[in-house]
Image 1 (cartoon, rainbow, N blue to C red):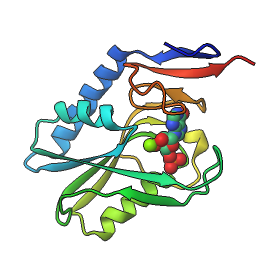
Image 2 (cartoon, rainbow, N blue to C red; image 1 turned 135 degrees about the vertical axis):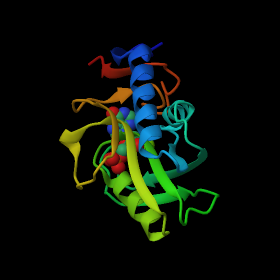
Image 3 (tube, rainbow, N blue to C red; image 1 turned 30 degrees about the horizontal axis):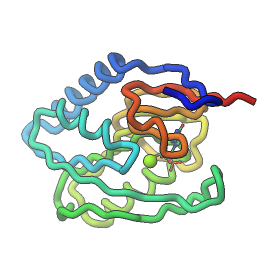
Length: 178
Ligand code: IMP
Ligand code: MG
């Protein structure tokens, strides 16, 4: 699956992701009993996670997708997040759950959380499939976390390296031949 000089070491197999997503779905269903939620997936990385999670939520769900980018040169982010594609449905008065593939510096989720609070959502909660706490630059409270991982570059289940490997059904660490 990997290109010649790239290697992928599986750290979270499909079964483990599936099991954890079911648990998060059950937790969300319990927390929002009697209410409905708008699940907003951040493209492209959170596409699979958002869809799989939505399938496990038993309260009424609406689904939206949006995308952002953070300016910066190379792999160093400036921390400035830019909205590239917005949601379509109105969010005022709605229970929002923002679904991300991974929280790294925290800049993206910090920006999105403020954006939807400013738009007068009834509530805004954050959900991340993966958390790399070692890399945090801004303090953000994540309400639902799939797995906490060490500071290594991961791909699969939506996450890419140079737009590759998003379609892997598991999560792995990429290493490169010297
Ligand atoms: P941050 O929390 O604003 O720094 O941004 C998180 C975003 O950075 C995620 O949505 C990913 O697109 C990207 N990202 C961070 N760490 C990784 C990784 O290990 N693999 C792939 N993408 C990553
Ligand atoms: Mg992303």
